[in-house]
Length: 239
Ligand code: DX5
Ligand code: ZN
Image (cartoon, rainbow, N blue to C red; front, side, top):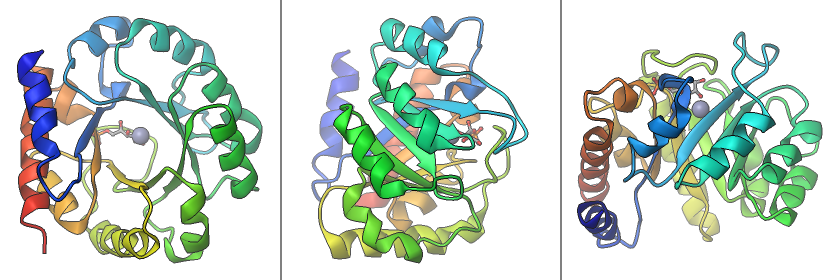
């Protein structure tokens, strides 16, 4: 634990930005989620991918599993909802114990109302953008959010190749967030690994989801630590 704490402390030294790592359990053993959570003890969050077979062509888990994992894991849960009609379903994930609930811009009908509802339930509210969705139309919504997620793969599956074409959008998102002030985290998700995390941090991301790069490693917690160090160093030398 001591080692984990010192690496988290280290993040605070760089321009007051705390780098956060959220391993995605999509790449873990679904028959042993308690064990998966325990294997990444230094992670800041557990990223939970909820897919409904409609918004994306894959089906994962729902609120009952989130509720059980929230009770079984030490880390807070970061729920990424790749589902239709989040206006209807997202609050149930906050009620199930998710500390952060992210809905997709392409699926939501009333983002102001939904983010306020999620916050009212005590959760952080996140907005996710598919790779081809521009950030600019959401500029005025940013102060209503706690997190912006820029997807760097088409959502639906783990283990896909990182889309470097999304890097300029991460950069533009960072500029918009800085312009508005406040403390909205900028998350990247999809193909984040030792090969790509530095470019994401350099573009301005401060929260990193990694599935296969963490749970596909022999020692998942070491992988978390390695990614964190790379991101911190890249943030520090950011142009
Ligand atoms: C993809 C999910 C991601 C996925 C990332 O739709 O949103 O969270 O688990 O997996 P990797 O890190 O393997 O690309
Ligand atoms: Zn995700």
